[in-house]
Image 1 (cartoon, helix red, strand yellow):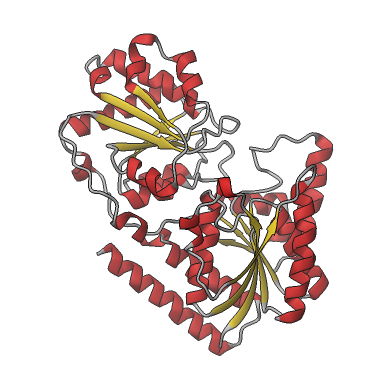
Image 2 (cartoon, rainbow, N blue to C red; image 1 turned 120 degrees about the horizontal axis):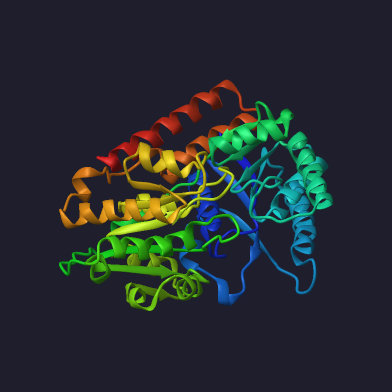
Length: 418
């Protein structure tokens, strides 16, 4: 039996960005799993549209995109309009469950309001934590108010979805009443995105290291320490300076850090590529030898780009902020590359290690660069499907059907892996 879902996602495609990917694939696969979906998003300005992402959303998903108002408190005014539209949707096609996904966290404000007004079960999906998000700088009063708001959300929500196990532990500590509510729904990747990328075979001997996306300078020391590490590694192994090429893609502020940290004689190793469409970014990353990234302070988040890196099947140099950084086990347990702490000496050591494997042509033999089915979007959405069906109060027959769907998703992903 089909179930009806009201899905609230401010960053619903064609708005660009990593969270838009999550929302797009949720729509795609939840529709495959039998959900009838009404969705509310934020209309993207023409300068910030990614029609490739919009194509993820099946035609049968009914989407209402609300224009973002101009002026102050625009997102809050968007939320007010979204609540009005959502109430109309509830009256016309009463859903079995409401799903809201953040960031932006106004999506949860809408989900909370609709659930409170209608009594429909509500699931809150967190791409990032809210109260304890290290990227937000709040005063004492602002932090207290944020916690009060989130406590109300948690009391109302049937389930909350978090992307890391460390975030689940933190929510249990911060909000004791969350026990039993958090579900592990990580970020992921789509194998099909990478199968048609141009094949790259370079015989020029360069060690090409690439990074794409935001530097997240307020939550990590990784970028600055990486630039220092390159200088240290090139001084330790002088021939590396002629062989190393590092490209930062869509990384605002990277060239300024280089100018501050890197002596003139080593700057020829670096290049900086401005904003490009998502598919072009994948093509550029696919031309790398290794991919570069760093985690966030606090251990509650994993940058979404690591899952893109998994899909590209490239070695990774991961820079972790602390021992609790969930990036560390993700890279090491799956043998995807090397992990360093956020110190120049440690990063330089791991950079030289990867360069040595490259010179000896051992990167592929020493690492495991295959598919990782548990992080494919279909498998992840199968988990979400189970959460939504439980929250909506499914009957035993629905439970059996949902289990079969999850098993089918796993079997399909295993075929892709092999």
